[in-house]
Length: 60
Image (cartoon, rainbow, N blue to C red; front, side):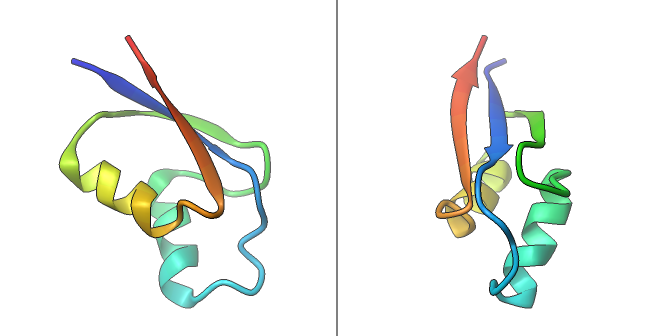
């Protein structure tokens, strides 16, 4: 199964409570943190909601 490498590139300061919760749900705590998640619709939706704070790439 494909995986997604997600990296936090911007601060959560100034974001809504929902956006901060989404970052925590993804496992991101600070700028520069990177996590690898399974490529599932739920994860894609979480990334989409904080797309302005993270970058992601597909990993085999």
